[in-house]
Image 1 (cartoon, one colour):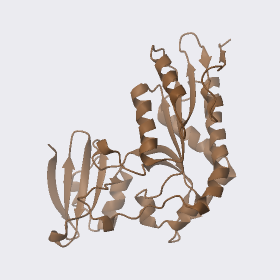
Image 2 (image 1 turned 90 degrees about the horizontal axis):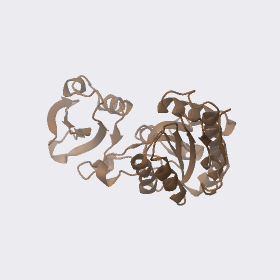
Image 3 (image 1 turned 180 degrees about the horizontal axis):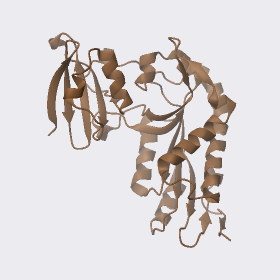
Length: 296
């Protein structure tokens, strides 16, 4: 059972609940009978406490602070639907730009995988690889552009830790986060500040990038893509572990079906053997026939 505590911010009751895997913050309307206005789900490790919440004098500042700590909007029946900003969906006017952006994203992914094969220990941890891909994406002028939101604030097209479009049933109403997304400038032009801050923009291009992931995590990424109906989802898995499970991971990647596309490379830590079938698989080539080379 979740542990719950209450405080008051700007005349509104704020309820903080901590469970085993997540914590939530629900902000009620000024009128107690109106119920919850908006709620956020946060990682259980996020440093949130009822004492810290009580320090805020404005609800908008509190909401921004929660988002900065990984909070994602709760789309549950306990929160008023009128408080949840409408989703900025992919529209026909976005399609032309997306069609041009997709091959640029694939080029950046291929460059990342080729770099991993050349220097598999250039990056120590997965998040460093995320930063590298972010940088590769921003090398393209089209993807590096800036765009103003509907209310005049400036943002960019590539974002890390973007909320899933739809919550997964087992998440308890909260939305998880995609590793990297690319948004169309025309989408951002239709979005206001709150829609942007709450991640209420349907990401047309999404990348999930992992290092030494097993079958459970990869299948979870695939489920994330499909639950949110991502138009252009890319699953990138780089491996440098000596494990008997490499075969089942490769079989899983080879079984992926559209629209999910995969990039994969494995470097054996002992023999130096390198296998990179999937970077050539962006357009649907199978794992069979992938070249294998050895370090000289």
